[in-house]
Amino acid sequence: MWWYAARRIAASVPVLLLVTLISFSMMHLVPGDPAAAIAGAGATNAEIEAIRTQLGLDQPFLVQLGHWYGGLLRGDLGRSILLNRPVWQAIVERLPITLPLALFALLLTLAIGIPAGIIAALRANTWVDQAVTGLALLGVSVPSFWLALMLIILFGVHLEWLPTGGFVPFSEDPAAWARTMVLPSISLALLQIGLLARITRGTMLEVLRQDYVRTARAKGLPGWMVIGKHALKNVMVPVVTVIGISFGLLLSGSIVIETVYGMPGIGRLIANAIFGRDYPVIQGGLLLTGTMLVLLNLAVDLLYAVIDPRVRYG
Amino acid sequence: MAEAALAGDGAAIAALPPARRFATTRRLFGHRLFVTGLILFGAMLFLALAAEWIAPHNPMRMQFRARFRPPGEAFLFGTDNFGRDIFSRLCFGARLSLGIGFAVVLATGIAGTAIGLAAGYFRRLDEWLMRVMDALMAFPAVMLALAIAAALGPSAANAVIALSAVYIPRTARIVRATVLVVREMDYVQAARAFGGRDHWIILRHILPNSLAPLIVQLTFIFAYAVLAESILSFLGVGPPPPTPTWGNMIAEGKDYIREAWWIAMFPGLAICLTVLGLNLLGDGLRDVLDPRLKVQQG
Picture 1: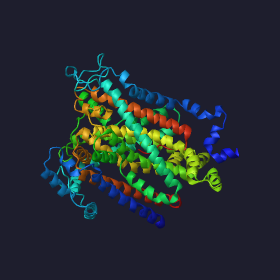
Picture 2: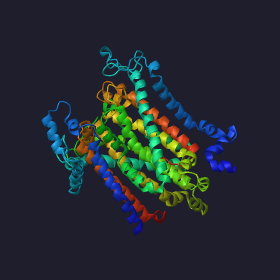
Picture 3: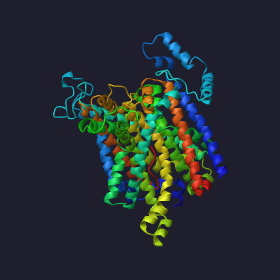
Picture 4: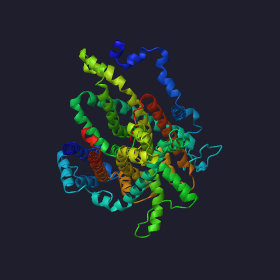
């Protein structure tokens, strides 16, 4: 176990280093002069020079790289050009908006995706299965930002059941806060629900064919016990992997969803940075998500090794 | 049969009587979902290829007296805030959106295969190549594509570069996994025992036998690329307006959804049908070509 864990951790170190390097190099992908691109058309030479100095672009590449890693070690991700404040601070300030949104979406995904996939597999090739598979396929085919707009038209403009966007802090009005969260979390969750239902169904079908399920049936265990005790446990392994992937999808999904619903969260921060060529925010956003996902994957893998001895020797 | 085994499955299939050679094609056309996908995607492809002849209006012509016309006889899907015909823009948008998707599939197919083959066959390269691929895959696909496109600047070519950078590692990983299995097959060992050169073994034996999962994966990548391109365009880092892409059209319609829902609705439907068609094609191909493969991650 310890050997496996050590190997797995050692393999993540170069990946993390590369993640920081890729995030850093984003600024250097800008063709021509990044400082001029950030300043925009019509900026004076003095303004361009000011940005160049502020971002350290006047220094040699290796000095810039050293500066970047030095900053990372101190927990400094640089300063946003548009907001004129530390990137780290800008992200942390918006966490209370994006975190609940992502959690609601994840909750919807788990509550609908897993049961739907299991039911479809248990009723394979019936109309129930076809309905679930069809809906799941639709879920992974609809662009989330477009779905968000359509939900606004239906529930916000026509039926007037829910607000068309905006955000109310929880501390001001919890009921209004909950109402502003409904449509965004549904829009954000749909893709994941479809994905999870498809994967759960596929895995469940495979597990149901296994010998140990047949044995459990043969020795006369009631159906719910075969499913609950023998099948479900083995279905959970790939499902947990998908949940890990979901975090990445939820974060990148929030970029468009928060833009459509006008929610001032992390997604909106990154969308504005992309609009406004605010490269330090783009770099910081990439770095944090990339690092988080690498660590999350590592944690999931180590967790598997603890639960399932087959992983350690695989 | 010995020669056929030595030459790999590709030659073995070619040597079969015609009835068995077309068995895969016949099974594909017997797959109901595959055919549905083919019809959906074929229809969108037709719109894209025949845009000049189908589109009733010039997609760029603004008619200020005809702004915000609802769908009807004069304008099938209505007009937008500049009085441009939405159906015509949708046809030309199909050309660009599918074109970008296809370019991404092509670039991903070539580069992903090359990297996957190299990593799977030359074991010394494997560790390095795959760590770089892992790092690129650590970022959420759409977020990395947005960042690259934002850095390079908004254009169709840069959208292709950004999306390819995101999907090449995902393809390389699939190809590598297949190569690792195929390289241990008897016919590869035999070819090596006969003194076959590496490049010959790769091209003649490994590549043809690794194609099935690759084709399935590339079909799904086409679907993801069309979806992701629409997000790039929607956020203003795709081909810049007034060029009609489906994402651009939705972005323009976003500000008018109260008065003119049709501006944003129809291009979104086009994306849904295209992606649905491609997903169905991918599912069908997977069922027929490579039943072991599971649903891939986005």
